[in-house]
Amino acid sequence: MPSKKRKRGERPSIHPRNRYADNPPDFSLLASLYPSFSQFVFYSKDGRPRIDWTDFNATRELTRVLLHHDHGLNWWIPDGQLCPTVPNRSNYIHWIEDLLASDIIEKIEANGGKVRAFDIGTGANCIYPLLGASLLGWSFVGSDVTEVALEWAEKNVKSNPHISELIEIRRVDVSDTASSSGIVESSGGNRTEDSSQGQCDVVELASLEMKDFCDFGVTCKGETDKNQRRYNEAKHSNVDEGNQGPPILLGVLKEGEKFDFCMCNPPFFESMEEAGLNPKTCCGGTPEEMVCQGGERAFISRIIEDSATLKQSFRWYTSMVGRKSNLKFLMSKLREVGVTIVKTTEFVQGQTCRWGLAWSFMPTAKRLVPSHAAEKSNLSFMLEGLHRQTSAFYVLQSIESFFCHFGASCKSNPSSFTVDVSVSSDHCDAILKSDVEKLDEASSHTCVAESSSSASLPTDTGYTPGKRVTPTEGQSTVRSILICVSAVGKIPEAQVLQRERPAI
Ligand SMILES: C[S@@+](CC[C@H](N)C(=O)[O-])C[C@H]1O[C@@H](n2cnc3c(N)ncnc32)[C@H](O)[C@@H]1O
Image 1: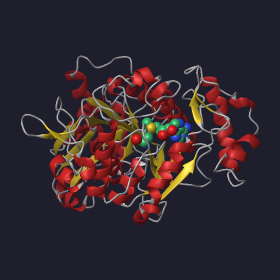
Image 2: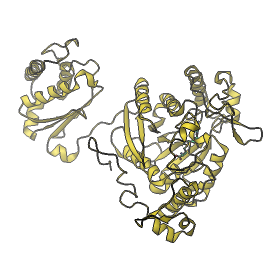
Image 3: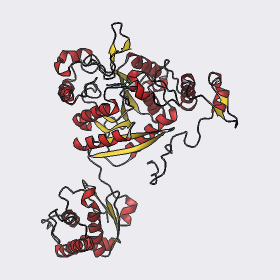
Image 4: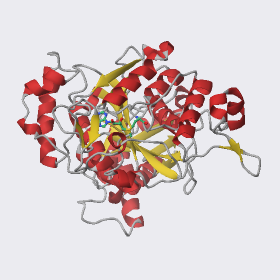
């Protein structure tokens, strides 16, 4: 079920299906049930139970008891690892649930109708696979690069046998690149902070042999020739763009794997100093978890680059974004790689804002006229590929005028670029059966009306009032209307991607 639309200016709120939306965690109750938690709960002057959000042990214990009490999950992380807040992380899961339920892109059931997901950088806490599997029965591959994350993610999965079958923890090979976080492997195998943090010790990707990639990669083992080739190509292009780092999707996915979506809470920051700017809470977070060269902008750019190669291996690619300025940058990058759709949302994270960014290479879905609407002869068109700055509004007006000319009741919606036309069954028949002459007349009328009513219409677009493409023999009347609209829209790029004939 899609989330309620927020009104302009309204503060984003917790997702309506988030179990904490109407029932925030009750610290008193939890303290009475969990003695290990009660030690962290104190009562303020107004008698309300509180915890010290700057105490890592308190926030970790809260997460542990919420996951246990509300989700039936056993969970733990070692000191200092990033501790997730359950209500916040649930918002991202529910937003993806909305994306999957929407009909914006075509539905393809690649895994027998079961939702299969990929969590990039699952962390020691493995929070997204645990929540996604327990709340919604989704299956996950959770990837990570650090030993501690892989070890603890695995432990967290194994301590929940009821969902462990649904979650695979996958090691990402870091041997062919130095960590993008400025962290290098010590000789003992433990991960230590490079003294020259930020100046990370990057191995030239281009100098690697295929062997290096295969020997260590969990995905290679001979079966992923195609992925290796694509990964190697991507390595070269990444070197050019300076976005080096361990593989993210290319080189981690196995041959032929298909996912409904990927998600990612990326290392947001370029340095730990930047990461430590919120002293009001203590959710832990090691440099490996919080920092990467180039910050989230570089990390998510690499996901975008991988997605441009993997295209429909995922229905949706998604990531959290920490900064609005990065969101804008990333959206323009997405346009460059030719995605079919981009969606964003804003998440409430206490005092801070985070954004959700989703994109897809799937064809946008045909809007089927729902049966109840068809009965009412409700005919709707959707225009895509219109550039806002090139008067899409007037295109909609043209469509509206066209149908109005035939006496139909019309309503255009400039924000969704749709025009809904409501007519009786007989009337609709009459419009659709109108001969070409009538249509010509109608479209000319539309054009003239548009040009005379709009002093601000651009004049450099090759627009000729009254010009339209005459439908060829055999084209449906609906088709001819749409071609006409395209022509009067003065927008060469405008394409009518979807059209329906009502079932009348
Ligand atoms: C901010 S943490 C997110 C952890 C967890 N998903 C969460 O939301 O709390 C980022 C994670 O990404 C991992 N990471 C960094 N580079 C990676 C890569 N190339 N592939 C997979 N994971 C990576 C880090 O080790 C870290 O665990």
